[in-house]
Image (cartoon, rainbow, N blue to C red; front, side, top):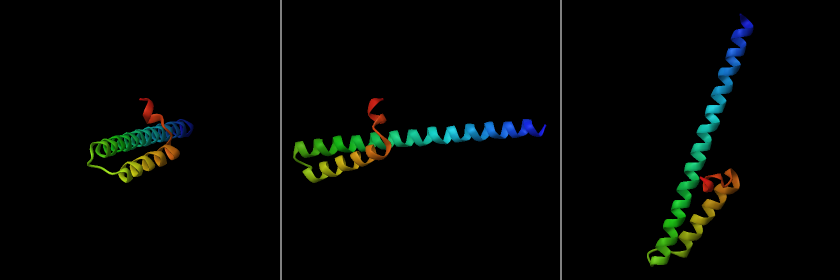
Length: 77
């Protein structure tokens, strides 16, 4: 009986870890998408005359930093 409970506990822990990993991936993709949207907004504002090149540069730098840490998977879907 103890062996069964140990296996059940291991499976539950594994499922919990997989769930946490999936939640982290979703958060990273959402953060990347938000940064991409901010870059687009900064670029549009700059091109329409209400933004600055510095704001576009800062948004691009933030996006590049995110990609360096988490990858660019959010760009593909």
